[in-house]
Picture 1 (tube, each protein chain N blue to C red):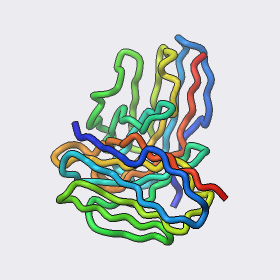
Picture 2: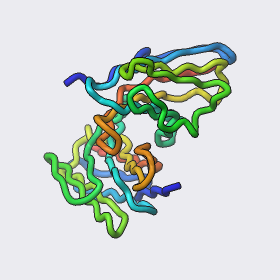
Picture 3: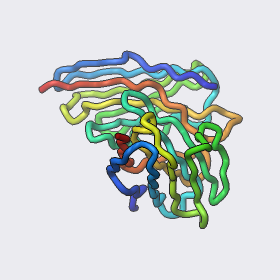
Picture 4: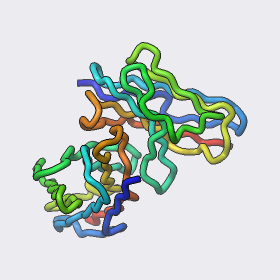
Length: 113
Length: 110
């Protein structure tokens, strides 16, 4: 079974630029999550989708972050404009259904200059 | 929100030694997972264990849900076991988002 695919693996941009990340979950997984992991900390949930609907985006900085999962399969996360404090690893995870084991992709490491 | 505390924060072992990592949580949970984050940053799913005991090779885990703690056992440690071990939980009655502990940094020396 193929795992969660994410791209790109690394991204370096200057502050105030925009960036987008892509995630393709495990086939058949209805629930998709985006987490942010700042160096030295555990991952923190940004947004959760159930199929193509948003379940929880309470910790998503909506003035600059947006995410979509239009067809209930792959998803994109966008940051516009980026700030220095957005430097982090962005992890995508998926699970068959809610409260089932979550499986993580390798993440995108974002550096803001 | 739910609190997750992991101990000890850091652990240094000689190769071949055994260890126990602990995770305490403050509320009833629907989901508890143990992850290993390797030096390349990959989060590897070790166990899905909201209750009970599971074993996978040299690793085993036990969650006592009524007492709100989980233990991860590593036996005959190897240098490849080095990295950060995270416990993550999602509370009952809420959506399924995982709240992570701060992690335990394990270094296994040859």
